[in-house]
Image (cartoon, rainbow, N blue to C red):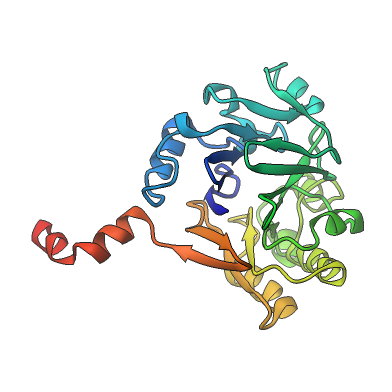
Length: 276
């Protein structure tokens, strides 16, 4: 399997997952043109445009996750609540707890507490490896942690630092929403979920701290919180609004692949100098 976040946070969320000849996106919070632009930065044998994507799996209807879904022109998968909230868009129905397949991928939707009509996260696997995508979750529910136990790669929401949110610039109503039981995970709640996952299964090889608030969190705060849980048993990176590199999960190992630009500079350094 191969995986990359193309975008993360309030500016737009999109994940790319590939297994064999199957290529899917999770969420559509960026425009078609922007998704195409970011796909071109992936290694050359990955999807190069939205037309090569087999399906788009939506987590919920909020605009930073589904705002561009209808415009992508690809098959959509969504819960009944999400379909309704998006105006009755055409989509294959997703039901939390009922696994389905898209080509070479097996997808398990996980019900999440969030203030959308029917929010889910996803555990996606190819029979050998599994990737968990868990963002927009209001609190550290044990049943949610159980559903993600044993994932090789874990995309885990670390939206805010509690102290920064309390004293930050948001109005009181928004602070209550973000910090409430239908809002977003704090660093501390992400730590709690990760600890419960470790009690139920082996540690992830890679944890990606995602959906960080620019106003109420810092990358180092999120990373250090998760590092304390994993210690030497796993690796933590923090996704920015520009996403992450692409990773390959194979034979129990996770490795970073160079992007097209990185491959170019490595393979043709002399040519690059000449073009400057």
